[in-house]
Length: 156
Length: 134
Figure 1: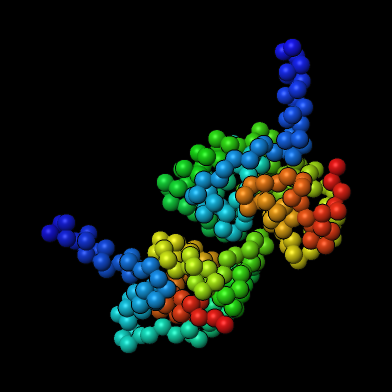
Figure 2: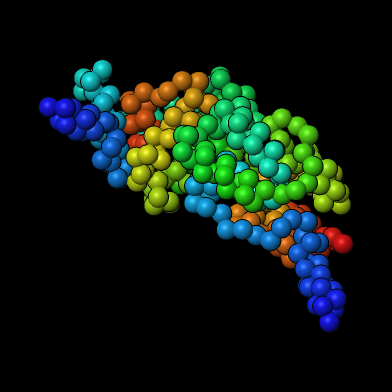
C-alpha cells in the first residue's frame, strides 16, 4: 500500500515537475518593489543559493545598472531568495544571468529564433512577453502566448 | 535643544510631507528657490529635460527612452522590455504619493540617465511635466 501511495504521489507531482521549476511561492512586497520594477520578479527557484548570493553581492554592478539596496532591505530579500533558491548548478556567469543558463536554454529550445528578435519580446528577460502569469510567478504552459504565434505554439 | 535639532532637520527635508503631485512640486520648488530666487516649476522645461539625450548611457539616453514622451502612456524598459506604469497621476494614482519612493527613483534614475543627482529645480519641472500630459 505504501508503495502505491508513493507512486500515486509521484504521478500527481509530475505536472509540477514538467513545469521546470518549483511550485509558486508568494513574492514578498519588498521583493516585488525592489526586484520587480525593471524586470519581472524572477522565481527564486531559477538560481541556486550561491548564485543568489553572487547576485546580491553585486547589485551595484547589476547588468549595467546600479541596483543597490539599503542594508536592511538587501538582507531580508537575500534571506528570502536563499530560502527559496533552486538546486540546479551555477548558471556560470557573473552576475549570474538566468537566461544564458543551461536550464533556460533547454526549456526554450523550441522558441523560434525569429521570436527572440521580435520587438514585442525584446529580451529573453522579458518573461511577461509570453508568460502571461509571469508577474505573479506563474509559468504554466497554459499561460504561454508567444507574440505572433499565440497559443498554438507546440510545447511538448 | 538636542531634541529640537532632529525635528528641525525633519521639517527642512524637502519632500518629507508631500503626498500629492502639487505638494511635491511645491516642496522641490521651494528648495530650488533657495538657489534661484523666484523659481517656479515649468512643465515645458520638464518635458525638454525628460526628452534630452543626456549622453551618459547608450542604452538609456533619456528619461523618455523608457517613460515615452507622453506621461499618460505606459512606458517600457529600454533594456528588459518590461512594461512600466504611466508617470502621470491621472493615469496612475500611485505616482507622486510616497516621498520615499519618489526620492528613491529620482536618485537611481538620475544617476543612471543623467550621470549625477538631479537638482530640486529639475525634479520640480519633471513632476510638472509628468503631472500634465495630453
